[in-house]
Picture 1 (tube, protein in one colour):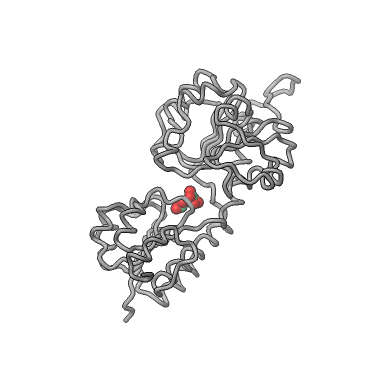
Picture 2 (cartoon, protein in one colour):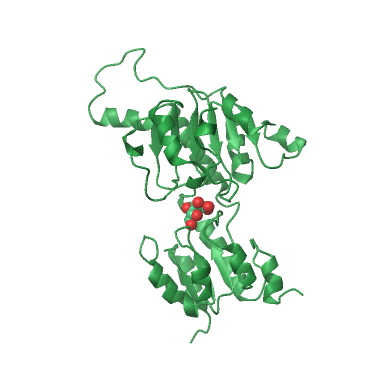
Length: 331
Ligand code: 8YV
């Protein structure tokens, strides 16, 4: 009989699930869809550990019924779905999975840059539909990426990985951050620090890489979109609510900007009505970290954090060290 009980709210790779099941009594959501809220509230009552997904709202209501919970090992780098403050006050450790999804997410941002500017999705569609009937020099033109200006908002791990890829396209890279990075690092990433306004006014591509916080919600609204060039594209692989989606829809509809590549949505998985009718936007189903290799690494990392937390050790990717004090692990 295993005394330690854990809940995993999403289906992870089989071998990782199996190795956790050797140690702990596991309750898991094995359906490839978000765990039902009522089932989550019921199951968490007697659990010592939780591996959570972005689709779980880990809020006060849930924490109030989690009498035994020691650790929330989140499967993902962004953990805006977790009330970290409330967890900390209860001495519950929270960890995430940074680093292992950096390349996959940067790849996707770049894929969107190329796909929207060269009209890949629309081109595939017309070809499939038998509408590629003749070639002509001025038909179906996109815009070149090479040599253009890329504005990165949030030059953290993923933003830097996007900047590295931009070198291969000889792009000028502008960035805006709350804090400017070291000049030597700026040189390494070939990135120039500018104000948000300058970034929006000068970039041909604006790519978002900030976490969702109270400061970044609706960071890009109608006022900011109106600063962008009419030929520019917005790329969002961060979090949907960073963009005011209705304002973006209006800007795309009125061609105030050329296009957008979106992987995340303000009211995910719902889309603002009208978005799917536009031909100047590419819409993906939140797959920034969605490669097999990365998902295996994320699951391994989440499991390692969970095990450490349950063993009374400090999880390698702890995001709320203050919780150790509340837990009595540190005086
Ligand atoms: C995941 C993500 O798809 O890590 C993140 O912040 O957005 C993605 O990697 C998602 O969080 C899974 O829970």
